[in-house]
Image (tube, helix red, strand yellow):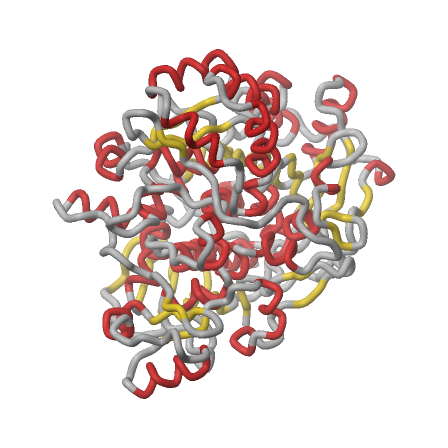
Length: 606
């Protein structure tokens, strides 16, 4: 079909009408993001389950989406039960040594973003000639995607490189101020602790678990390091950080975040001008080689991006995950790696010699080794960009411009490109620290939002924002592709960890704005111990379930007792390797060509 067009398009969904029905807990993010992208409400929906979303108008066939908690027979009925079953509680609880629920609605938030992705992808597919499709996504699949790296590591051929045990930041100063510490440099780590007169043995023993906390969701470094920071005032700690090159960030409250919030959407779009130099020619095929087995799929409603090419120059989690999802939607993803390949391919534990965590984010991608510091290789990258549809990166702020690879540079060789940057702060905070997951959590009040009342605020050591930021990055790229289809112009799209944090904390910030306590009540989403494990009641059943002492019962009997009283609960997954055989996800989790666990695609198209 011809690409539907509108004049003076400002947002990707201008002229489309939105209809939503279903419980707000699982549909609110879908509604909010579609409105921010330009859709206008068509009519008020009924509060029925499952959540149903439609987009009509704009020259497209009606786009449909359904959002659910999980399979109707799985017993997963809300945020608490989904977190419990998918392993989110287990991973988030590693710092504490027992499973813990996130007090924020993390899987519902991720589900909403995934549903928006599915709708946008379907519209892009329609514009490229495929039939309209009905997309379904569910919170259980969102939860599995969120823990996919941890699941891959649990199913690897070898054990973890570091101990999985309780412990980790944040640290506390002499005044009782809690703060996060961040550095990616072992030299800066050592210099920081030497400046505070930390024991040399504790300093050395602490680096490896601190370095690996992004991968393991825990950091069992010596307690002596916590003792050291409690002996120094915050001013002295800041001075040590400034002298060493490390960074500290005091944990902010949700109230503080609300006072500085600018109300900006979680992404931005800047169309390119209509003119510019043409392509510079194709890339020699010998320079782009498959990194893992991949079977191209024909263009279809289920693979709406088939035939599109994404160049990804991503590090760590955020950009690689965004590109991974674009690949699942059918795009050919070419990963730009340094000479010798991405060093994270060797990060333990491995499956068939390749990092299991790396495979969770990068399986199926091709790879091109390019030295971006070399002028000849930068020219080659420009040639590749001239033939691509999307260029996606998460380099440090300013690096792309310094290299001559910023959006204006690439627009000159490809005016139809979607140039996507997934960063930390999107330039929205003047005094922002390093834009990494845990620092953004600390600065935006996430540490308060994910812990209930009565517990000290603490950013989760599960990479909440890297994952949610990656989902926002995919959402932004798809919106950019749709905008390109509607206008014929390329576009720069920006997303950030800050935008992801604001999406996650939006309900808590709304409570602050109403003068209410932003935090959930004490004990919120704390699993209940049984004789052989843990169970998690649904949020609505939790107060009554807490009155039952289940410690003398096995998990199956404890669940039966609660159900006999009309209460809903599910078993908590504590060993992620058990997910392969969990009947709540029957047939969902597979293994890739390297033997690494692979979670199911987060959407189904029909």
